Image (cartoon, rainbow, N blue to C red; front, side):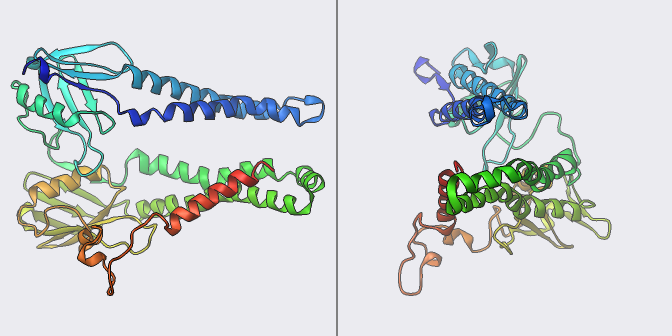
Length: 374
C-alpha cells in the first residue's frame, strides 16, 4: 500500500440533518413553557409544564451535542502503519500486527455492522460510514496476524452451542413497557391535559363552534393516534412473544434443534431442505421465517434473539437446501420493476409514489400541523 491508497472513512454527510432537527425540537421544548405562561392569567408560570418540557429539551440538546461531536470528529484511517480512529474521545491507533480479529456483527443482507479487534481496543463500524468496502478489503489483506482470514459472521469467544430464544430482557421488559406507555400512559396523560372542561369551553367560546370542533378532533388525533398505532404494531409483537415464550432453537456445528415444550425437532445441516420467508397473512403482521427439514418444519419471528445470527448460520451451513437466501417465494421478480410478475395482463404495471400509505401519512401530518395550533 502506498500513500495514494490510504483509506479515510467518515460519517456520511446525509446524517447532518439530525443536528437542525434536534436543535428545533430542543428549542420548542425549552421555549414552550414561557409561551404557555403568556396565555395564563397574569402570566403565571405553570411548573408542571416546566418539569415536563425542560428535561426533554435538555435531552435533545445532549443528543445534538453528542451527534455533532461524532459527526465532526469521527474518522477511521488505514495506511501503511495500520489503523487510526477516533469517535468522540481520544485518537486510538494500532499497527497491523496488533489487529487480533475482524468479523461481521450483523447479516450483510441488512444494515451491515462489523468489528475490528485490536490490542488497544475494538473498532466498530456500520453503514453510516463512507468507504467501508475499501476499508474491509484493506483490513482483510493487511491484518495477517488476525485469527480470521476473511470476513465472516462470527464473534471472538463465541462458543457452541448457540441458543436462540424469546426470553431476552428486551422481550420481557422493554417491549411490555413501551407497549404500556403507548397504549395506556399516552392517552391518559394527554387526555388529562388537553380535555380539561374549562379549556374545552374556552375553545368553543374563543374560536366558535366550527374551529372548536376542529380543535377537539385534532386533540383526539393526538391523544388516540399513538395508542392505535401501538395497538396495531407493538401489541401483536407482544402477543407473539408471549405465545412463543417456551420456544428455543439450539445451533451446534452439526445442526439445529427446535423445542417448544411439546415437540422436539433435530436436524443436521445437510437435512435442511428449504428455508424462506412466509408470505404475510396481514399487512402489519410479523415476518415469519420457515425452516423445512427432513424431520419436520418449524418457524421463528424477528423477536427471536438474535434472529439475524440464526438466519446467517442457516444460509451459510444449509448447503443442501433448495434456497440460498432468505426471501419470500415468488417475490423477487415482483419487486423488480418491469419484471414478468410485476406486469398486468394488458401491459406494464405503473410504480409511483402516489400510494395510499404515503397519502395517508402526508394527509395526517398536514391535518396535525394545520389544526393543532387551535
